[in-house]
Image (cartoon, rainbow, N blue to C red; front, side, top):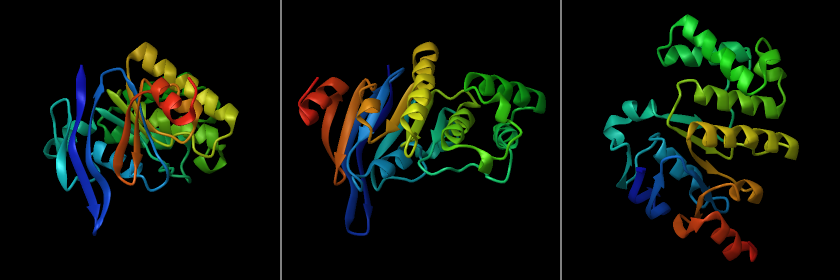
Amino acid sequence: MRFISVKNITKRYGNVFALENINFEVKEGEIFGIVGPNGAGKSTLIKILTMAIKPDEGEVLIYGSDFKNRKKVAKKLGIVFQETTLDVILTVRENLFFHAILFGFSSSISKNLIKNLASFFNFENYLNMKISELSGGTRRKVEIARALLHSPKVLVMDEPTLGLDIESRNQLWSYIKELNKKNGMTIILTSHYLEEISLCDRVLVLDSGKMRFLGSSKEFIKNFYGKV
């Protein structure tokens, strides 16, 4: 089932094309990677996919809903931004609880959701610690957990493991793969790490705002790295 459709997307900043005539679809349950050099348009595309900004031309449809229905779409999306958006002076529990309340969950349901996610991501012992006291890897776990509180259909992540050591990256990816395989969650991500892209079902390559490649991760590795 194709439930994310990007049709003829173009976005300009002044006279510069951030994105130009981008077209692709994402299937339900797919891990879809977006790659390219810095300035290729990856973050702009993520912002359009999450309906944070509107394209100048074209449209994005998620379950048939467009920008006019972005509040409806927001309930289907979990978002992990490239830069941390956690409140560093609050505890892990307080950050997650605040987000759950924003989505309309009761206090008792919020507590259960937080407990279950903390167990899944293995940070039960950090719930009462301030975000500022956590390692980069644990912060990333909390950010992904926050994005999953409302049980979204799609998890969108912009450079989710940027700056983390190899062990932390591998640990986070084991959680992400489990979400995809066990829960059928669709995952869209940007990354510079080849080992992460190799886990994707399909890959979109952007360069200077234009599509340069769309195909399987194996095809991508073969075409761009000369190996399978």
